[in-house]
Image 1 (cartoon, one colour):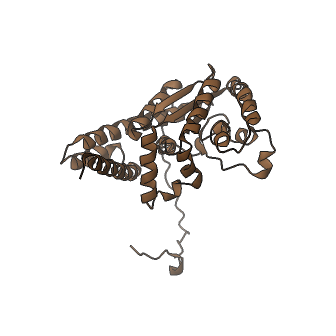
Image 2 (cartoon, rainbow, N blue to C red):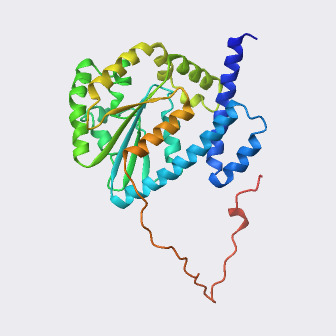
Image 3 (cartoon, one colour):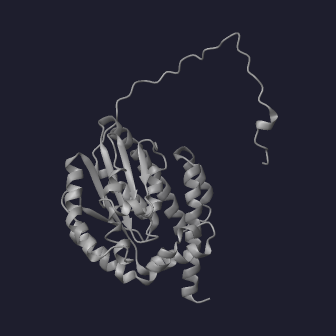
Length: 304
């Protein structure tokens, strides 16, 4: 086995470990973290050390996100966060970690499909406006109106006049959002050509992730340089003082998630929300109530 082959196998093993980590994140909480990591630390190599640091920081930041959520509700803030980047750049993974422990009634994700025939005849921003937050809400856009500057432009779904009109309109549109009281944050997740090639290859061979790889994603590999030129024009023409772009180095997915969440938290000053003590009332019991049995046929079969 050549050194390059060994490197490839190491990367594949790390990717598989990341997938396991994603499941662990959903099952464990901070109180159980120490024991779990101690059990995993029998072979304390670099990967184990990174996992230990990652979990600790992720839980700490998610605790802060809960505090931010409560502050947004308390103050009636309106927050919009845009996540942009190439296919497989890690936008969805970062969004998942942000929303993982938050109230979906407060923090929701907008991931719009391709526009319908009717939507194509509307003002370009119209279908996005419908998903903007009311007071006390956070909306995370998994791709946004910047589709026009990226995939629509590169794949030929619009012409250059449409793109030029977008570049003229979007700064004013975003300034209008900010003037209306919306806190607008824009993140671009940046990966290398080689990293995208690797992540696509992993999706091809992982049956649980093949659904993530669409024909358009595959075509984007061939058009890497066209997407690069489109990205450069987008950042140059839409980076404004009222709504600047923030670039997240995303080759290392774990660091990208932590860095993005940490930065997001720093953009919105928040404090602890005063709360009244919660006291559970005594349960009301009625002497004449008799609980009725549930028919056996209503139960889910106990296969496990």
